[in-house]
Image 1: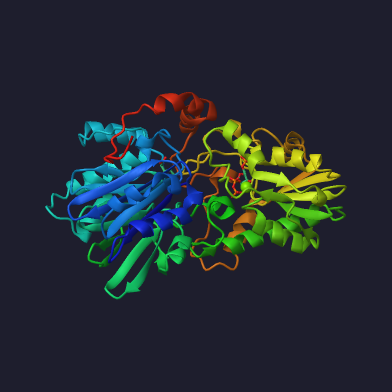
Image 2: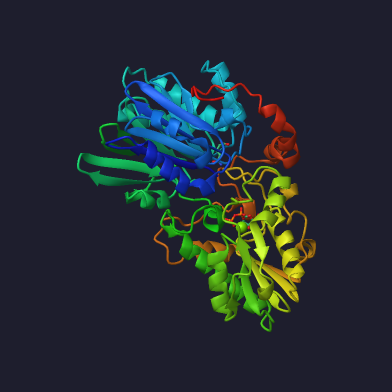
Amino acid sequence: MCGIVGIVGKSHVNQAIYDALTVLQHRGQDAAGIVTSYGNKLCLRKDNGLVSDVFRTRHMQRLLGNMGIGHVRYPTAGSSSSAEAQPFYVNSPYGITLAHNGNLTNTEELADDIYREDLRHINTTSDSEVLLNIFAHELQEQRQLLPTPDVIFKAVSEVHKRIRGGYAVVAMISGYGIVAFRDPHGIRPAIFGSRETATGMEYMVASESVALDALGYKIERDIAPGEAIVITEDGQLFTQQCAEHTELTPCIFEQVYFARPDSIIDGVAVYKARLRMGEKLAEKILRQYPDHDIDVVIPIPDTSRSSALELANRLGVKYREGFMKNRYIGRTFIMPGQQLRKKSVKQKLNALDLEFRGKNVLLVDDSIVRGTTCEQIIEMARDAGANKVYFASAAPAVRYPNVYGIDMPAKEEFIAHGRTTEEIATAIGADWLVYQDIDDLVSACLEGSKTSAKSFDCSVFNGNYITGDINDEYFERLSQLRNDATKEGKRVVENVAIDLHNDETES
Ligand SMILES: O=P(O)(O)OC[C@H]1O[C@H](OP(=O)(O)OP(=O)(O)O)[C@H](O)[C@@H]1O
Ligand SMILES: NC(=O)CC[C@H](N)C(=O)O
Ligand SMILES: [Mg+2]
């Protein structure tokens, strides 16, 4: 999952994009980048690391211009090399830069077409560089000296016809404006807003509404599935539906884990959805264990807090913060490599003995994927003197790979793979384990929400891939390319990838 942002302002936008990226940092911790357009020049800075590590004062000073785009990366394709940090740049036509959240499922086929038919060179293994070149090619095909909204919308329509998968995109056309679009299912989120200033209207596009809130932008609306918006450098907004068939089926894992609770995605308030997940999970626990002996409900910080709180309320059991979180350690699930994830859980969370000693505790997490977190947490709870340790997951068991922008490529790596719920409980060391039912999860996101979505992409839970182009062969290839062992082996080699940054301060 990555974070994208684009701003067309009335003064330099470097600081605003930086600030927005810090608000979206939870979506990607591996790399960050900003590109701005200043006269005829593009100013780019991108590298591996957190936003605060990548941008120094000297970089910020050079990111001049009243419009720009930014990205925080969590890789789902290609490598984690700094050469694949985003935004990507292509010089023809016009000078285009692009930032992408999501994952294309026909990248290999597209890369081949780009080379053979479009005569374009791709320098990395990133699906986003492929996407940029498809967009650039389709723009070039319009044969216009200067872009116009119509030309851009036509190009986006052609892009939709060629690419498959999940994508929310923000692109900047040098000296002209910003373009943003979303895949025909709206799998990945994108929203835009505006801000009135003394010198005119400013516009911002972002992955999540929280970035607009933080920057003082008024939310206009989510970009519709298949829709494209164009904001010209002088502040005019154009929108158009560019896909033939659309159906809003956003990724439910945004609601479960990825998004910040204070965001509203496609009309679903994430915080409220998580409260309802807790409520429904409590009802299931009451059905399954009417005579339960739970003394205390303890969340696993951070993401499960909202669900755990409401779960405790509904059970009528005390809610206690039994694990303290080191605020300087990021999200562990999106870290690269199992070793690092494992080490980070211990560094990140510490048990408060007094909340565990002699008690029957119910630990609540938003989801269990590889089982890295729950296995260690349960051990910590026992070491802290818990009598019984029960475990509840606010999402169903993750059994299927994600192909739309979350790095869960190999089902063999999931703790639920080939195991029943009881067997998973044994594997993680819990006295019992309860998973949310899929229908309850979907209801938790729909009930009481102002959303036009009727359903979600729930593929990691039910194996139903809404783009309809995923088969066993694809999974095998994905697993081979991106399982943890392969990525680990590639890491050293990747660091020597040719780097085409245009940033002079690179050492
Ligand atoms: O079963 P696993 O493979 O461990 O994955 C699931 C865990 O990872 C995530 O936490 P993370 O630390 O990434 O973020 P958080 O602080 O937002 O909860 C998620 O909230 C679960 O706790
Ligand atoms: N998580 C994402 O959205 C990743 C975007 C893109 N596929 C990349 O790997 O850079
Ligand atoms: Mg967590």
